[in-house]
Length: 294
Image (cartoon, rainbow, N blue to C red; front, side, top):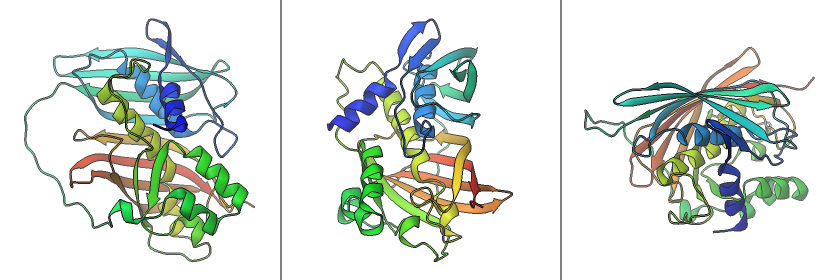
């Protein structure tokens, strides 16, 4: 396990300061605000800490309300909405400087047998044949930008199947992208230094990664390079995920993403996350602000 992954696990290991109240630290991102995936993952950790371990998360719905300050801690307050026989519902509000910056609703369910089907997994090359971020990014970005992006994503081994937006600036193409990802190191489920429930940890790590590339497909449709080159400005508005089947975040996952629409200064991304053996693990939908600078 590399130091970046250890740091990310520490970031997700929230401090409990009162019953149903937790505090998380922040760290700098590529832009001068808290990375949205961090807030979403920490909020899900807070919710999960109030739910029995035998009830894994099956969905979350979230709104990003204000930009987070990476120099200040974030306080997460959990509201125990419902504890039913099969389902548990939690609401989490993230607060900084006395103001809510993020709101999440999450649902958890006991395991049960039921109807089973899924669509087929899309074709994708073996992730081991694709270049790593450290190999690919300096080919397309100034070295200082590439270094910042590599550092920001160092906890994750993320590999693009096709060229990312900043590699094809000015060349609009189909609004679809694929990346393979896994944590940059195996997760030790017996590591007592991290108190997050193991199954919840994998879900929270996927939540963290899900905010990294989902709006890339919006950019591809318009030949925009995105945040890395500064030809658009944007931020996540809302985020929804459905967790269909168990998965491990330290094993390869295919993130198949597309954008069906952009309008009104907003872009929509939708995606599915697949295990390497073809199991549909997660569905993700996100809308974000995507504006061309004046």
